[in-house]
Image (cartoon, rainbow, N blue to C red):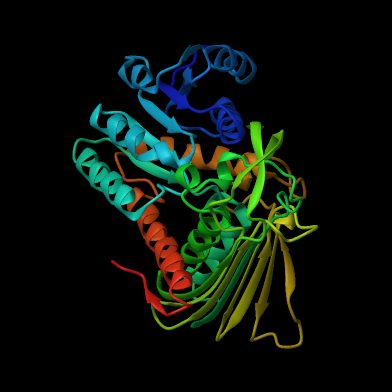
Length: 391
């Protein structure tokens, strides 16, 4: 059968953990969803020619570049997918948008508010020319989280009063774990706060449909020095012997806040929750009901309807055809996994490009999250003073 959908060439910068899951999404999306354009995995960019070629062969990319600037110049690239550490997001995204390439960029959008503002300005200018951009907060595409957003939007929780969110991991509990790039401020921007705290900030704001207006925060770095790293891959690292370097990011962040409309919120992001692997949890309490979600049981949403006071929380198994995204996959009860959220993400991105609409979350949404991260850092540095989230 001849493929009738037009092709959009994708160039991806970075091939490690995020590069692998993004590659899986680009390979899969057109086989599952009736997207308006077929992504062609045109070129992969990385600094090492040998490692990039190996990754391209493994992940399914047609060509390689060792300079992302050459990737942007290529005529067979219409979409640039940024999967690099945060210190390079702004430069790559701004250059790609200026060249007329659609951009999807991993989270957090940038390492600083100033970088995020520059990226957002570039995105707005590009949108006027029909060039689209999106920040990759993939947890919005978990079917249960999308269903939670629907419940809130339909008023099933009534007036929102409490939001409590956690993101708990334990992959750096060992003090001998090496000093990988995620533990260095110049590359990562911040630690648990930006890496996983950004996710729960965006997820909470997405479900509630409102933004945080101010925070009071604490941060802590439990292990101050670590062995220098010889290399890293995903969340793993290889130590470099006895020499150590300074950890310059937070290991954990804890903050309370207030949403537009007055709802109170608490957030916890840590990579020191021993025994917790990827526990993104959120509970929302309203005047008419509550909902609860834990990514470690990602196909379930727990819902309480106050009108049914004898029932307590009930489990919604989010695998029905009418649940968000699920109908394109498997029969009811056959659950989805982490990688499917990225397929949903690029599906929505491709549809927005074809429709000529701005996808969400936008760079402006990413900027708003960056402003919350900055407010958390400012509050923690000033003795937990209440700090407004700047507009």
